[in-house]
Length: 307
Ligand code: AMP
Image 1 (tube, rainbow, N blue to C red):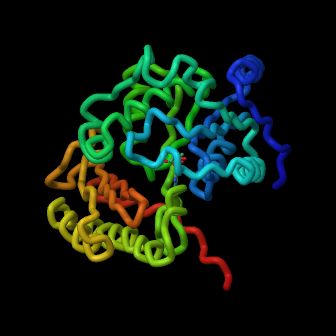
Image 2: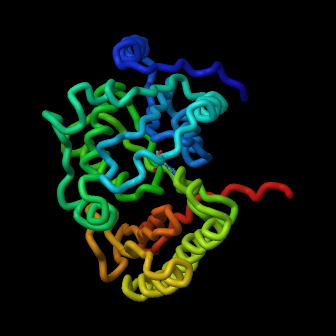
């Protein structure tokens, strides 16, 4: 299927005017919020939005407020031309690429109203990356205010982020449906990420072990292992072998509040973060309790390319 190329917007006012008109004519607006360096994971979100919405707005914005002082803001890959091609190939209707000054005209610190989701952000990436989720929650709220979507599509890859967004939408009465989409994986299982570009050849092959360890855990959980400690220790041992001393966390938490569980007896997430070379990689399994049985979402693998 070929689509019209998307309209590119760099400023808020004309985009907002256009979206107001589309909404007034009864169109359903869906949004996919990204930091660019797009890959098949992002494309899957556009595809999901296309199924349910008349208008799909893709945003590309490397949001400075969600990066810590020693993180990779400056090095984060920026590939706008290729991103626009991917957006066009998947039928995004509009691409919004604001400058930092358009999103934060008063600067990123002074007088900035901040959205903070408490509790949920106290563990995992929230503990390792202080202030990260305040930056995410604030910019997502700003995009919802600018774009006025009916629905917004996020990857389960960023499990804690998805939970934070569900919570802020509920607590702040924002009228948007939050849709969580499966993790898209390379053919060897590695969760796709813009940060995979940081990996050299050896690191890239070692990184595949992250998903392999999670898939073994998925099999064990579905076979009846529900002790979080047992699962965590096995995954830790696998990750230690590829990245000695570089595990940030391996945890089992509940899916809504992200608090640690000892027993997997409700909807849960097995989440990992590990540093491989320069890249901090995250991955997870969403585990759902359905009719008394634990079912694990292993994500979707891309087919191996023909040699
Ligand atoms: P990012 O550009 O990394 O901020 O991600 C933008 C959106 O794409 C977020 O909702 C991510 O969860 C989602 N995403 C990133 N990688 C994947 C993936 N491998 N599979 C599915 N969704 C993804």
